[in-house]
Length: 356
Image 1 (cartoon, helix red, strand yellow):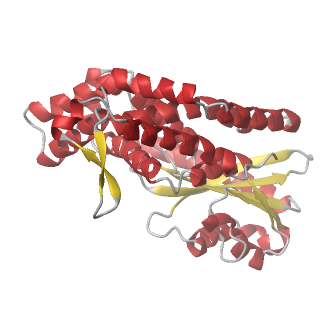
Image 2 (tube, one colour; image 1 turned 180 degrees about the horizontal axis):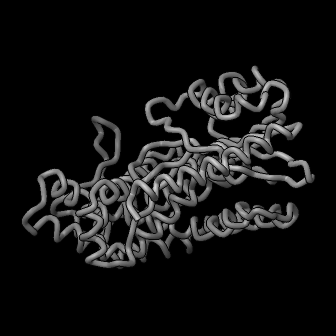
């Protein structure tokens, strides 16, 4: 069967499904819309639009309406326009009674957000928050002002970008270890961040081997070699590996909670208990014993951290490399890592995490 015939069959099936969905939605007295963003394999940002309605048999239906490319423009006006266009044939001004997005300010802002723009044209469209996303965003917001955490997650994203943008690089990693891959995802989804952190934490040795091969084997371009050297250095850097251990523990506590909140059927009381239990578990990490565990594990992996010295003229801490790199850290260095550990642990606890 040729590609042309296969495409014709797929398009015919899609047309039948679309026509059936179109007929059902037009018969329904009300409609709700859910919009979310995702990235395809080429890293283009797409909006997914889903409609919910009740059919003539009284059954609640949920139908996918389509992907919409918003790579070039992701502001509130553009997203609102896409959402309204997807349902323009269903009389949204009168029939749209609910809209659901995540908690990003672009989406949920009361004045200039997507929900406000949609409501200005569809006055009956109540805004319902996606709580799983809200929890992700609360956690992300908690570390937003911690410079070390921002740099850490930028590095985590760099690992995914490095391999996702080249089939040759990905093939080399599979050749080194087929079990290792670094997933990516939306900035508001910490379950994707947790998978990436877990993959780097568990596959650190294989990643170092892969980067090392790129640096010495012929046939690699200059950009790939430079990026490999930089990422390999991150995997051998105490600061990065220390934060890798910290977030590996945190995500080990939050990932099961995300799985519960993402279930199609959830028990509200159980969800409340799981959220409180997760918060309590995170709070329990704020001890010298827990810090020492992560710190000592990092020392076992990459050795002692470089000494930190104060540059009086500029007033900021710096890593003192060279001869001091292999010396035992002074008390100030250990204290700085302890302070960072507690700051990261306290960040999600200090936020206003919703209890549904």
